[in-house]
Image 1 (cartoon, rainbow, N blue to C red):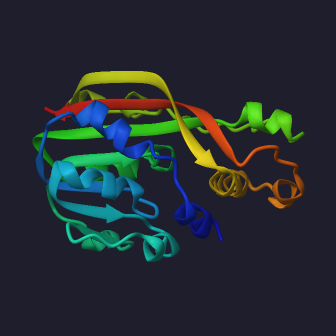
Image 2 (spheres, helix red, strand yellow):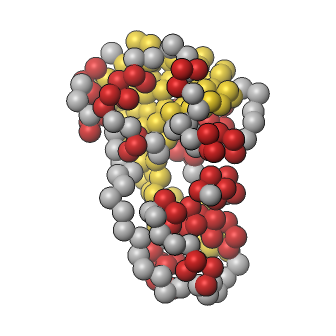
Length: 214
């Protein structure tokens, strides 16, 4: 199950990305849309008194890590009527215009909206173990400019930057399993591949855009 691979290991990039965009800001209530297994919600805790982690997948929510400041739900009717921070971390690609409007209506005037994501470069490793390059039309840099009526938000930052992180072979395989399943590809080739090392340094790109609601 995809939620098992996502909960097993996620790259340590959520905290880094949020520190870049939120800096020393603090909020009363953050709504994390598309929170998955809660990695982004946990990373939001230092910036908000309360965090609501929402994901329509019950399987993802069941795997989410409990934290006193976070309330997880897969029920859209349980979302708060208002928030002062609205976060889309790797989820905007799955949200259409109608759904986005429902979420942004909950953001108070002057509230902050952030679109964040990261992209791990697996290609050098895939080439070494003889696997085909990953090909996907997923847009990691998607932000409000891809939607109509985005002018009701004032953009104050848009950035792409590179970084790197270390992971064990087991962690790497968890990442590859999740990526392959997300693309609808068989993970059997990962199990049969020959890995030469027990630890790896992976490069990644951080994408983030921040807005203020007018």
